Length: 257
Ligand code: NAD
Image (cartoon, rainbow, N blue to C red; front, side, top):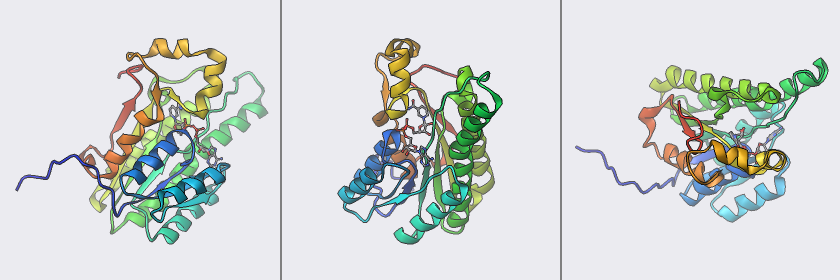
């Protein structure tokens, strides 16, 4: 019998944990998942008010959960709390991240501080959350989406070495999970955005101007969070399961490899 190829995405019955789910790309992902019927654990660090309002407006049992992901124990605890409170998780979206500049010649202490904070939030906590998700998904299956970056492949400028390294780590993490746990029904995907108009890039664009970013693009408009979010809903639907292990670029054609 042929597979049903109807393309309406209905995520009723799916529960998702979205880290950094109340700002920028994470907010668009949370809204898209909820609009498609999913129950969302909207994680926040400082955006508690917004996260709680979003969860309330979804009006489907979604909830907000706070955690500072600089602390790996907080990451672990976040997964446990969300899974317990929502009766299980089917989709983990590792979206929370930081993009902090530090020049390599700014002094060892300053450089190390940024390196450690960036790796802690962008990679260590993502790894801890993946590990929790793998244990939870065993026997029931599940999907993981890691929001990496174009920086993992193209590289970044000198002041973002830690950021690029953290995102490169995320790609290897995502691929290794896909290879290791597929037989247990666990699928893992990475998304690699280029510049996306969000609070993260506001300061950068204010400083460097839109022109530099716009000139890199093959398309004639900048990417925004709504250009990224639908892919996560598509992955959540299971229609992309046979692409497990892949990375999908969403960068307006600014880096094709
Ligand atoms: P954003 O600043 O709007 O969102 C980042 C999120 O991470 C926020 O919700 C924030 O609360 C959370 N976060 C930051 N520090 C945290 C901490 N210590 N503990 C817990 N949560 C923390 O930026 P965004 O552009 O929406 O970024 C989302 C993801 O997309 C990030 O992983 C980022 O690296 C990635 N990304 C963004 C771009 C871009 O151009 N905006 C490009 C490539 C990849």
